[in-house]
Image (cartoon, rainbow, N blue to C red; front, top):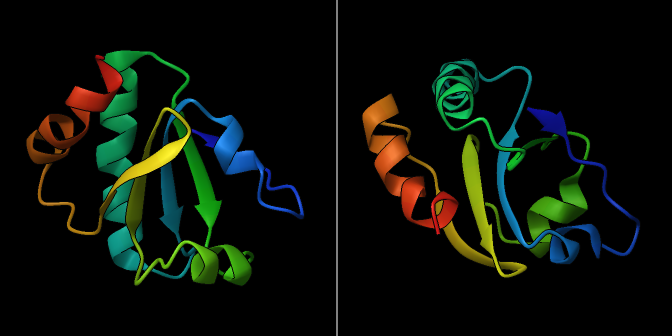
Length: 104
């Protein structure tokens, strides 16, 4: 998973046509479990769509995009946020939740 580098004016997110952005905090145990699930999915798909963002370092991003909690998976398609996932139930659940955006 690649670290997402944000430009000061937040245009970075709009430049991504398709992306899965994992928003986390390094001190969040649930985030570590969610990360393992996403690592498994990323290994299956072998596509460069997965990015990560440390919420503690980017509070302005959190506020601008109304991220309510971590972990959060932002799903971007056509440069727009299509879905925010906060509940990481299982690898199977997450794979189904994002497959319609990845495989399109």
